[in-house]
Length: 419
Image (tube, rainbow, N blue to C red):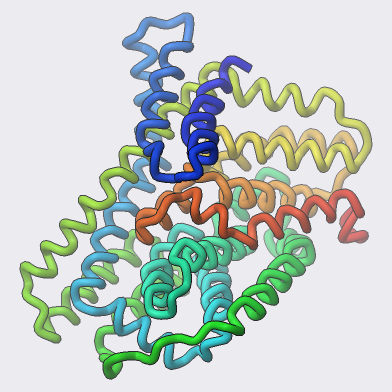
């Protein structure tokens, strides 16, 4: 349990203090991570201080952490570059004209679901749609955190289902089943959640009255977002997608009269604006590595699997296993890879359907990743929308609804064919 205490320190400092003060900005998330990281180094025993710091640095320099940082840098440059040339305003005005006012929330949610299924990554979806969603919120008077939560929720629909999602690949490989079979089971479990949330957004959006576009749509300025969405849907690597988007903003900006160095300066500000997010990611990576090094994840695995009894209990233990692993790693793919082999052993012992086990692994990892305030997706969305991660969590519908449907699927033995 001691190995897990840095995570408890972080949650108490950031989440509990924020809730007690009823102010999500009093306790900076960077300070919460700094304190919990120092604590993690302090409680690590058996090695010298230099070696503890080295182990912390190993976690911070993990290839997945560094890849996220590169994505953050490119996303910051693209977002501010697009804003500088007027691409966001043009896209917002176009969206307001295409979507009826009362379907604005539902339309953004459907767009996030569609893009995330096509892209296979929640981060890519959030990068592409959050600036547009924020612009729509500002023009319609909708709370920015709420509109951002619509995008974040929809982004996990595809992260959970897409054939090219890292989580789907990891879940099916660890359970030795076909992606299409896992998709069939997974869709039956989470489709009700998506339909319920869509219905909620239709009802909530019925009273929205969008302000008309104050100026004529400049179609050429929509091109950068069309490039990003089109290349993302085509399955191109997210870094290449963002690079092409940046190039598109430059070309369109120069063609429409944006000063060259104004565009370059905006991109610089976008990259600088990601500085806090990068620091948080490095601190989180180091702290979570020390939790793993000290045996925190192994402890969780042993505690959850020693009292499994029956198929329902076995499936619930797998759900809890991957959920806690995700809490400790803040990465749903790594959580699945960590819990997958144990889940496979439980599956074989209790004769579970491997297709449903793969769905459970993927669904519960996406559930936790979608609601933790220190996950890459939440941090990225909060950074782009300039709101607190906790304010987004408080406005989420889909991840929680997805989790409820997944728990009911285990308890009620649904789908029957795979239970």
